[in-house]
Length: 313
Image (cartoon, rainbow, N blue to C red; front, side):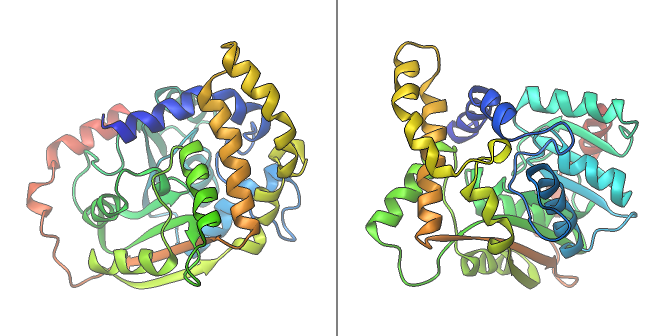
């Protein structure tokens, strides 16, 4: 694995219990933020509601084959398989998350429709034009190159297929101040992310890789409680600053680790950047052109794809 892929895998391994304690629930199995509206007013319900909202934007139906790029514990993939009835393959770098997703899918009786394997979503083993939807929910920000991911999504999708990306997006204008850039940099470092793009940059990225009909949806207001409050604790995010001395002590005594400390500090700084208006939360849906012929389609690993997919079940 590259340095960035190793960084991402180690981040989720070393912050595993932070997510278990403060964020991920048995019902939602989520690592993403929530969508709060009249249908969801608490943390777990909002995490699940985000799946519903994004599935509608991406126009996912029962007959679709979906790639969940960065599938975590499989919460979104299993929700799609169970509630929409589509077939989903989740790819994820983190082995313990993937193992748990497989076990849960089997326990829920949906392992034939929700399958999982350890793989890099920017270099998958699947055949070209073999998916109807590529789903990237707060995972593309971890990519070594967003360009490589979008190019791979274009290869994987059938003409007319949809790419969904839901991510933090930087403010278009005015230009970010030095303070805002520093707070975002702390968030990127703490959460093992590479960079956040503007909605315009995502749109341009999709268009130059063979997508048209690119639509952006600003979901910031609906997800705001997820960034200003600490998940299961329901405490304001700003309250974590009082934990910094304890976390630093634990890291020095090796009762914790530096990755966990950066995770908490980075989240705090990223929330401060949000409160300053430096970033928003955007869903981007792009449709693969029906006229474009993929340049690298003939070089795709046609025979290997289905064998790997079957092995993940």
